[in-house]
Length: 215
Image (cartoon, rainbow, N blue to C red):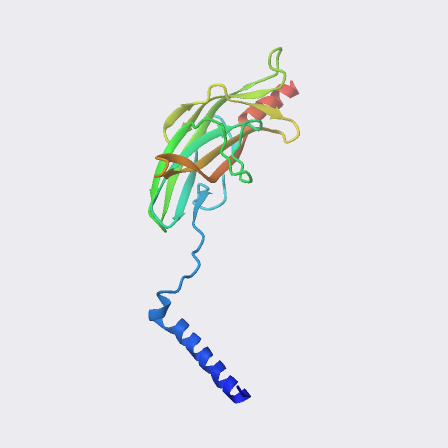
């Protein structure tokens, strides 16, 4: 084969490949890589923006946020959202190991989200708690929680406490929302490796602590 014949063959092959790729009829049989399937979750502050989240939390006060989820899984999905609370020493969900918290769910919400759609729900919450100064049985000052008020439902927090952290200067609290998804093969919900959370400082207890120390 001489150089001219090789050039003609190369042009012919290039033209055939271009025709194959450009043809709408032939494109239907091409297999393109699928986009990643995932669920997007988020929290928004009281102004319906990603700011202004409550941090300094006072006993008896109420706070407003928005919880959202967008489904990009390729089909309608059924989510169970477990509402949990912990202090700094209790179990938290682990994004690296993809594990959920061992804390019990205080409340469960359910969301059905069609494919490529989103759901967003307003939430109202507040805590009732009291300050307990150090004594013979409790060496470190702590917050003793009585209840979580969540969307007009009163949830018991009996047994929940938070010790004073002198390094950070807070009584720490962590409210978080774990997303679980219904698996038809299992016939139940499994952890979806998604969660969002809010971290708090219990300010009214902190004020009482400072007053107690100043006496």
